[in-house]
Image 1 (cartoon, rainbow, N blue to C red):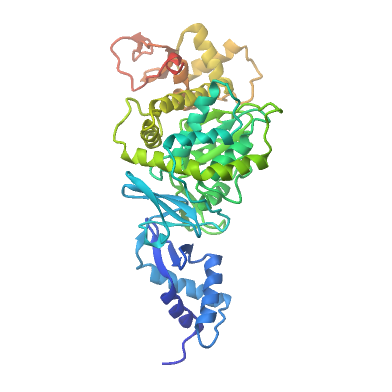
Image 2: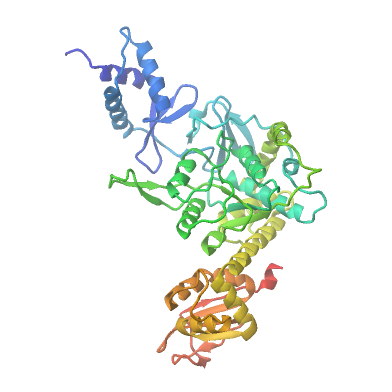
Length: 506
């Protein structure tokens, strides 16, 4: 047998030193290194470690060239195709009845079960694996704490004492934080809204730092879904700061990330190969205005209003972060206790809203301290206010609400309705920005906003008739529409949208 190549020698060394595995549900190969580290085989950090290990492990030092490394990675991927499969997570994971919270390199992983928790140092002995960014920051060891001590969070946020809105906003933030520790199910997008000086950015960074500290605590608004994907690859919680608006396409990307739906991307602009990105991540948006005008996104969101702090009560950021470091271990311990309560819980509320997995998990956890129903009520009010805001921010739907409020009802085609609304508003040649250019555009707008109209007690029905699609829009109960487009009593509509009255939100 001839002399072994540099690649063969390196492969022999690495096979003795590392373990390979595939991420469950993918063909991606990863490597477990001594010290609890896990990297993709193409990762630069693994390359540097491997080069050093190969150089120091052989009698005759071997320096791998770039082309050698490419060949070596291909060899590791081939070996990895027969390696074990593990669920792979960033910061928060789950397996069976247990949840896991990665504290970072050199600290360990918190294993949380229905009956308690422990910090595991030998992370590669766990049934899950964690991917760690080079910029991920470690969390401290949690302290033993009572579940109610989670309300220490109030000391880190710019809430004004005595404001009746504070308790509900704080409860929503605690529920949202608790939900971030559940890797099963969806995450509602959290909108922190408030005027300048309300401490929105600081609040967002504090919330992220309690669960997923990172050198990059927030990112600037982006219109490119790929930027969102990059952030989600290496962070559990993604923060977008000072958002003013975004397109329907980007709103759809946020929806997919909240629920974990797949996004199809090309690996390169010049590459036709398919790449599927599936990320489910908690998202925080901060804004002075209300950027959420897309009903689908509103269905997956909650809003907490922050109020300007008087200058005499404002704290320097350094003081806030010093207090964060002091309180974080105890708040973490309280959150872990709430997770255990959620895992023990078996009950179910009378009403489970959208994002049901999130709502049920938080309801069970906070229910252990008597606040489950209060959270669900606050959550529903929050979403209802977003829906109402979206209605009044849309030039067409707000006019429709005004028209129905005055006239009581409408029945006719989309063409009839478009003309009726234009006459009602006095529009002739000049239409406002955002006005639909044709009846189909109006139909699509009404269909998108039908769940938002729910918050204002407006019932909507669409039926196929000889005249075409007939829209019947009215307050409360609707009469049936006959096949000739006239009201009748014995016709079953193709699609009935039953909408809750505004009073149910008050």
